[in-house]
Image: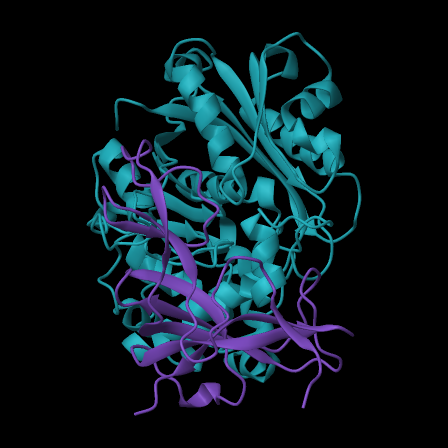
Length: 397
Length: 145
């Protein structure tokens, strides 16, 4: 499709769950599955990049090396990266650009995590220069606080209701029921969601994603390599966006407690979140109307509605209508989160963006079973992470 | 009447004027941009890194961008009252500086009476207390009609 296409030869995932085992085990499981899927031997891989985990000490900070050693040292170049929730996509981008530069033929990209219970809390100690410490200290601004702010704004500006938010969770639970890798494989009705306790009003417990263990990996290659292997029609990555915000960034974002000021330099035409997928569409030379499905970062159910607008499925304020009309449900015009989304997985930070791409791979190959989006040819992922990180991967076949 | 001293929770971040409290920020005159908090090495306006930053008091009126009430006790380093009470975080866009600042809602304000877009003002409020001091932080309160 585009001038920057690379092939995805294989995808693999360790199921998401909560076992507290070594993150390396989950990542290796995913790598082995991806290599088998790709019909590539580890010894033929010439680059590996790992998404880091911040909760597992030193081995987590050098994930590329940790997984290279776990699979067996072969002397190949490696890389490790961290980009908060966008880590997996940044890892994909590092591999993709190396392939496009002609310096690598086949690469493994992996991310895995084991995560503690409850709220994501900052590291211990007094750190008055760290906004992530300050927002807890001065405000008690947990992650769900930000999700609550965005959700309430949808209610006051666009008439979103509590039922809309519950609907998103219920929809995704029906999608995830059919996903062997999902952590939560159970139907949630709108009533059950609305009966769950309030966390960051208007959001309720079942509308805010959990944190999970998990691991995901993909095997990427140049189109030439795919051709040599006899893969006639591989799923392709046609675009990756890892853009940063443009000053001034006027939407309050974790973990800040103030935005940039737009008093001097006017706000850019496009908000940061809108700019993420926009860059991917530009690179691939297509638009949102060309999409068959999307995997977006439903950290909260309400956030999924923001994403419909951010990735251009509809205008601001119209997301609720898309949802209520069933357009984003499996069987609808543009299914969103056919995997079940974070609502069914919970978040395993370094693995999640890769997991989003794995879903696209299975969908575009027609291998998604009961979750299959009919005739899927083009899909997009979108996510956003702390400190100006965001990502979007566009795949096609 | 409390014999405890009211001290700022963060030194140098706000004036302790009970009637007209102000956040203390910085201004980059060359681009007309404001910054809060002050922990800014150079102007974040691209191309303005050479500009000298001036300390300024920010205005204390704005419009409610959004709000949310937290029903679960947050982890450290937040100091929760015992027993825990739900508290509301409000995001307000300062009208003059065109920046959104988070702050807790002032005591005694019912969050269910709020709506996005209404006028809000900065007030001083207690973040937490120990045996000696009341630690003061900025909070948001609706402007009386």
